[in-house]
Image (tube, rainbow, N blue to C red; front, side):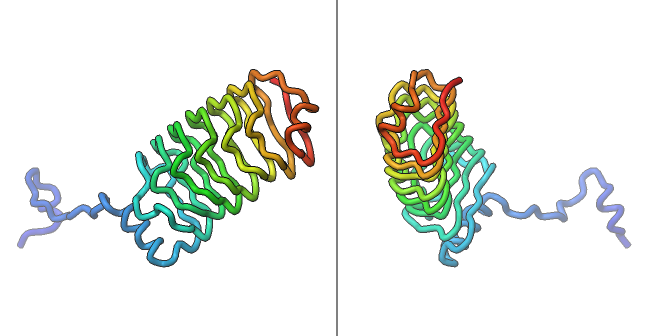
Length: 196
């Protein structure tokens, strides 16, 4: 009688363990999420993604969508709408193809963005675009809650949201902006943070 212990300890033991398929696990997970109506949060964080799954293109996610800490250079195949959208800490060079409506916060910080053009037109909560290479704010939504644009290359306020219902953070930018200048271009309800 052969004992299991003997088989496991043999040098050339037959492969009695079959590994689980993981190649398409993420794709199956996303398809199941879409099939169930895109209800809830879709978290694709730290998955090594270079491109978003095609099945997400144009859908509405009734929850937040996170794809941060990946290898994305584009938001192609992105949902059209979400209740929060987090694409920070990637390698994005453009927001083209991203969501048009974010009913919550939008975070595209820590990327390689030189422009906000192609980004969402409606963001109902915070807009965070810090730690990029922005020289202007062209492409930003008309209205946001708070606007965080710390540590960019801003030399112009062109494109600043017309209404900021909270505060704006502009520290660590080379532009020599004044509080009066910011308030003349945008109706900032709370504080304007400038300086290094």
